[in-house]
Length: 496
Ligand code: BES
Ligand code: MN
Ligand code: ZN
Image (cartoon, rainbow, N blue to C red; front, side):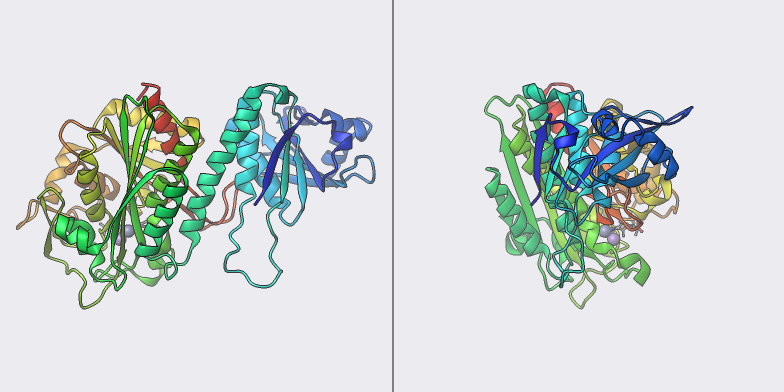
């Protein structure tokens, strides 16, 4: 567990293993960012010369290390590039990159620009998130542990706002860390029951009300989507409901997350190279859990309910078949033409169920389609909605939360591609193109009449198969948590 603190102490006296400073890339060359002056003094004003000599240019993501040779109490300066000009996200990324490069150290002081509470929050969030490591399955001591003590250095410490900003950063980082851990857990150790148990435990610790439906209750209540997807696995499905309610709440927001603990494709089996990262197919459900945990800690004036639609999608003699017809909760029928389009089936059940809470807004989050990756790449979530205003505001909330999201349409004329020869709707389209939108159009059919709804497809952003960057590690990223928290706060403020 990392210890995070805030100080205004002089750089020279900081008794830490390393100090982190920022470098901005200016027209005239690299220049030191605010916060670095004390360190520069200890270098007789020649720190930028030393950094330039080592090739530092101030580019985003660049990390340059300089030994202090006794000029400071700390033995090492880590200079991190901020790019040409920096905003909150640039600060988060720089702090994250610096902390990643310092894994294995004991204590680090971060002297990046932190003059305002927003900057303090950005630096702290980036540092905490960049300091993540998943070591649960590592043996021996050959693996670098996260930094134990992070100190954010800021002139603004005297103001209570800076302390509150630090606390908020810790709360958000804790929620993101929970999601990353759950996504990274091997699917043999995070089957549907285990994910539901984790949700119950986190929910109870956070003071949320928790309800879990098991496979029998799911059958009895008519959750045909979750039951159908889960029936091929020896590990039966679950539906979790979490609820947070402020006593003065005027509005209700419902979050719905896709919780496929492993997506083999079912009888419509995936090829091996598409299957090897499908432990991450519960990233949406984990994000809903993480968001509810953070919301409970932050205490906005809102009612927030979260649904986790959990199943394992496996092929077997009991698995659903392509051409089977399911009855979704509430009565609509679906012809399952491809068992690998399973996410929309479990989500349909949970979206209909969420309608019973009479929410003012439903936001669902799902690693729903490979087509999302084709359209928007690995780092940008697709945002669809049944209301233009809601879509714009959710995209805006994501941006303010520091997450990349982009608006996508749900064209009415694509609905006919989901017509089924036998049921109310089919789960795949006869048309190959625009698969992310097709999935969104399918989900829209299950949104209760008159309820505003947005859908986040996070297939790419939830899991980083590439190299780490900024504050994003390899593997589970915790995508969408910060967006959902922002959405809940915007609903509380009457802005969404
Ligand atoms: N879980 C996958 C989507 C996915 C793909 C998530 C890649 C993360 C990375 C989803 O269940 C799926 O298999 N979707 C199919 C739908 C198709 C059969 C209509 C897809 O996108 O190929
Ligand atoms: Mn699938
Ligand atoms: Zn899936």
